[in-house]
Image (tube, rainbow, N blue to C red; front, side, top):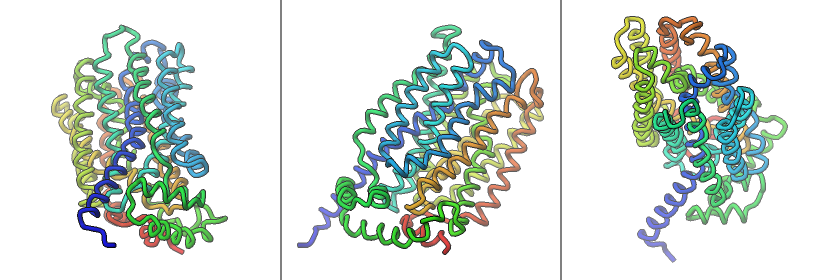
Amino acid sequence: MQTSPQSTVHASTQRSRNILGLSLIAALAGFIFGFDTVVISGANLPIKELWHTSPWFHGFFIMSMALWGTVIGALFGGIPTQRYGRKKVLLWIGILFTLSALGTALAQDPYTFSFFRFIGGVGIGVSSVVAPTYISEISTPKTRGRLGAMYQFNIVFGILIAFLSNYCLQGVDGANDWRWMLGVMVIPSVIYTIMVFSIPESPRWLLSVQNDREKAKTVMLQLGVEDPEKEINLIEKAGQKEEPQAKGAGLFASRYKKILWLAFFIAFFNQWSGINFILYYAPEILERAGLAAKDSLGNSILIGLTNLIFTFVGLYFIDRAGRKTLLIAGSIGYIISLAIVAWAFYAGAGAVFLLVFLMLFIASHAIGQGAVIWVFISEIFPNQVRAAGQAFGSSIHWVFAAIITLITPVFLDAENGIFKDNPWPIFAFFAFMMVLQLIWVLTKMPETKGISLEELEQQLVKD
């Protein structure tokens, strides 16, 4: 019995809808990730004034503590993701986010505050491992880029909502405004946790770890896969080739050397663009440029909105133009914008001029690194070591994010910072790092668009 073209199209459309819905739920972890990452920018100065902390103490215990938790979560998140499955880990992330929001909002001293920021950071770190992994494993080669980039879209949407929330909550409770800014994250955390109950386990995990063909087949049918048996056979064939080599060798076997360097450098350059520096300290940077405190918070919203709009551009082009093309375009935008921001601070060019090029920087990030990083890392590792590989790439990203956030007050602090009078050398340094990124992308980065995970394994893993 032949299948009609109409029924084939209907099945394909149904599959796309099913995968999109599940990807959106998993990617909601990214919304909380983005919200939690940036919400601290509104609490930065009030907490500094409340607890009278030194630049080093403030940088470590207040601003970067969540990022050290993120490092731990990213480093070790691959273990439960591989052992217990993607779904269970996604569920626990929601619980950690909820605890963090409540704890930081109610904290009465910097140490309690730091502990609960750390807990939230662990959730972020683990989410950067499991959510992209899950999405890549339920997607098709043609849609994997834009579905994986949904995680990034939710991150930047969370960033925008955090900036908006901080702006709206300023002045609602006087000195306790920052508590409301942090505590409101309970709402999306609980909603996300409830929604995760409705998603199935990854069929690739069910096959590669549980060896459960029947359950994997059931999930594939739920996803709308037309020929689950054929899909299962392809996955098992790749796994049979990989397994003898993977056993006893682990992620750091010589055959994965190329993939490990690719994951390392894309994560390394992501942070040395200065993206977290600008997002975490946006109000302070804008105040330094001459904007009043309320204006700096309001203009932070413009930065978040720019991030969101150009993430849509990245989503549109990632499966059309490809990952490498987006990183080339993003690198050129980084270099131009960061160099001009450095000059603007050096020459005192004015707050509006500087804000325009900060927004160009954000747009360049959204189209390039922002759209590509989580997709690229999640797709280059083979099924057998994908969770561990994602953990490796994520942890490199978060280690450098934590270092940059930790040392920023030492350079930026208005009273004791090394560049307290004019922070132009910071932006000049980031511009130089983006020149190095452009060279790396042009000479070392492969294109991965439209290629199945199993085909990518054949291309990138060297026996």
